[in-house]
Image (spheres, one colour):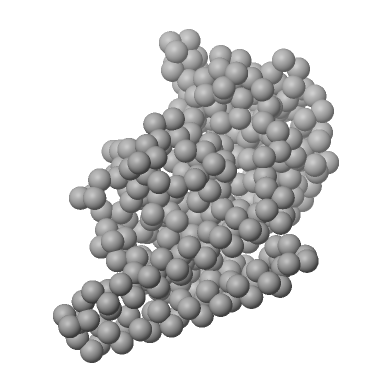
Amino acid sequence: MAGITAVLERINGGGAGLPALGELLDCAQSALGALGVAAAEYSVNDGRVIAASGLLAPFVGLRFDGATEESKSVRAGSGVHEFTVDEIQPLAAGHLRGFGVERLLTAGASVHGEVVGSITAVFAGEPMLERLDEDAVLRFAAATAAHLYTDHVGLPILGDGGESRGPRDLSERGLFVAMASHELRTPVTVIKGYADTLTDHWDALDTRSRMEAIRVIGQRSGELARLVDRLLASSVGGLTATEPAVFDLAVALRSAATELPAHLRRRLSVALPATLPVALGNRSDIITVLTELVTNADKYSASAEPITLTAGADNQTVFFRVSDRGTGVRPEEVELAFERYWQGVDHDAARRPGVGLGLYLVRKTIERQNGWVSLRPRDGGGTVAEVRLPRGDR
């Protein structure tokens, strides 16, 4: 009760948004005896986890299909809906089974008669409360979440005045052109950087350094050729997803870190474990994703502050994080940052050039591999970007 009172006092005192939502989820988890509780927002065709507690915390950023039967039943109206783990979407079900989840309870959050999101609690084994009591807690949590939206507090979808976000994704063909252009930039930047180094500092370089620069130029030229081949092959059919394969994420990250542009290599502190479980995805995308995340961290943080690359694993996923001590990300912007062309309210185009496609394309790239990406404020200041991929040994 004390926790619920604290949440209500925060909201009534004008503090709301994702911090208040996070406190609400913690309270609901404790009251229900749940393994975890998550809040999701809905757009026209899909939904996304925007906040979570307990074992669901790693799922922040996970996209799910809004057209499935369970999603439709929640969006159809009020009430609490119960599902077994076998009834939900296969991607989420596989992850939750690994944590011992057996059942889920979901309540929709309605604003002006429209279900704009939901609160979901997950359980293993026998319930701690009677079902009526569980329903009451879920209904309260969903109603409180809806109240945050009616107060226009800046939550990702409805925080700017209460209008639902429509479909904003690029067409399949437009997405390919955007991704190809973005991916072309990485090898071209690296090739130019090493070519300039050879041109400007040839006499100062020893033979080993010259050969290493030539090796990288050759390697990235090969990548460039493969990207052009993909572009030509897609001239009729659009973007075709690469079949995910098992790969060593730790090795891929170390390799990608060595191929970053020189100014980014100097700033990046690599603190990876000796080994990680294998990942299931597309290894060739790791350099593009890492380059974008480190570039973003570099753009929004002072040059004297290091950018840190770490990694780890849980029962179902392997992940890596890029952390900085920069200007940070506001809680209400952690999802907006992934919108295409979004630049932030304090964007300075002169100091921070770019068109706002990088994080959008990072998310699209990772989601095509059944993974997900999230941003969050870093304790002590700055931002943490986290990328998760399915484990390849499951």
